[in-house]
Image (cartoon, rainbow, N blue to C red; front, side, top):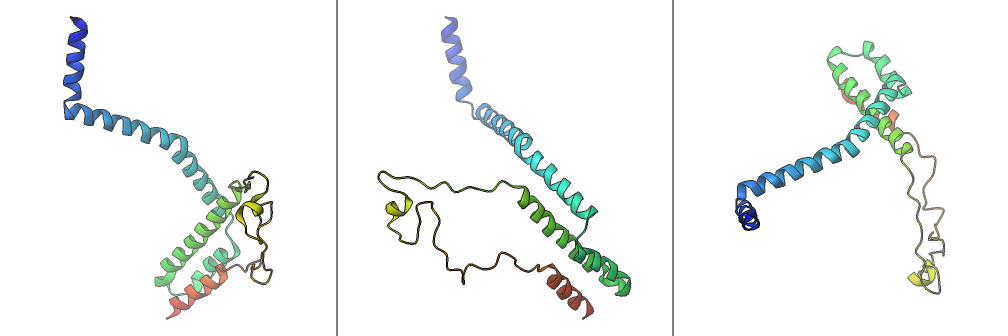
Length: 159
């Protein structure tokens, strides 16, 4: 008789939408807390630490903009500060991206041949790397665009 009562109680609970919604909400809260603790908090700490490092050691462009503030109209200081913050953000992102592990491409091997044989693409080598036209590849040493942005910001301020 007690087993029948338990089954009856369980079926009653399962037919009550409020109990089911509460259980689903509780499960969702547990998942959110776990994801926050495992992923969000460490990422947030890493970003904060990198941002602190960048602000402690600002780029030349940020120092230049800060040094120019006494020579420009005080009403433009907020814009200069926002530009400096943008430079800090860019440098923080650059620092974080350099700390991230690089994805290593591991080519798939097919029966009887490599990636090139399987794909039928003559420009694809067996190691998974395509032939690259050197004239179209771009340059590894791309110019730093931060000074250009700083000059543009100052030009906008002077108008």
